[in-house]
Image 1 (cartoon, rainbow, N blue to C red):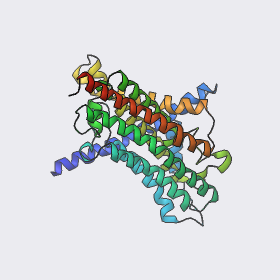
Image 2 (cartoon, one colour):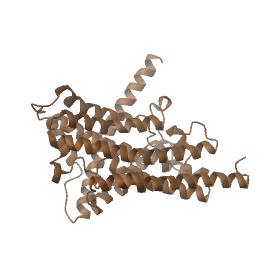
Image 3 (cartoon, one colour):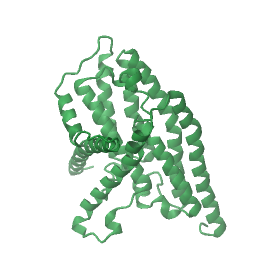
Length: 339
C-alpha cells in the first residue's frame, strides 16, 4: 500500500466516523421525537441528542472509589470505537465498504458484540451492585439473541452461495446481489421470515425496550450505566446512537440493498448524493419499525421471558426461514433452474 493509499484510507475512515456520529445522533433525535408524538407528547427537538452530548463532554467523569479505574475508563472508548468500526465494513449508499476487502459479515457479527462486551466490562468494573446485576443481564441477553442472528446471517449467505455467488459472506456481494433476486416463492417467503427475525433481534442487540433489562431504570436505577457520568457517559451514549445506525445499516445491506439511482433515471452527477439520502431513509425506516414503534407499543420483558423468547420462539422461526430457503434450492434443482 502506497503512502497515497494510506492517506486516502485515513481520510475515508475519518469522514465515515464523523458521518456515523452525526447520523447516529440525528437518528436518536428522530427516534425520541417520533416516540413522543405517538405518545401524544411534544417531545424534545431532533437536535437534543447533540446538545446532551456536548453538555456531557464538558463535564468531569467521576470514577467510583471501588471501581477498577483503567477498565472503567476504557470500556466507553472500546464501545464507541467498535461501533464506528462496524460501519467501515458496510456499504453506504453507492459507496463500497472502506475495509470491505479485509472483512465480511462474520467479522461484522463479532464486532457488533464488542460494544455489549464493553458495557459488561464497564458494569463489572464500576463496583456497583446495580451495575453488576445489569452486566449479568446483558450477558444473558447477548447469549440469547446471538443464535437467531447467526441463523439469519448463515441462511442468507448459504442461499447466495447456492446460487453461485462468489464471496457470499461479503456485504458488498450481498448488496450487489439481493437475496430476493436469486430466490423463488419459497425462498422469498424464507427470506421474509429471516427479515422478521432480524427485526425481532434488533431491540435486544440495541438494549432497547422491551429488551432493556440490563438498564431497567425502575429496577436497577440505570443498571450498567448507573455509575457513569460526564465524558464516559457521553461516549456510551454516542456508542448507542452509532450502533443503532450501524445495525440498521447492516439490515439494509442484507435485505434492502437497492440504490435509488439504479431504480430511477437519476443524473450521474447526483447519483451518489441521491443514493446516500436513500440509504439514510431506509436506515431510518428500519430503525423506526424495529426500535421506535416496538418500544412505544410494548413494555419491558422480564429477564426470564426475554431468554425464553430468544432461545425458544425466535430460533424456531429462524430455522423455519432456513428450511424454506433449503426447500427453494431443492425446488430449483428439481425444475432444472440450478444444475
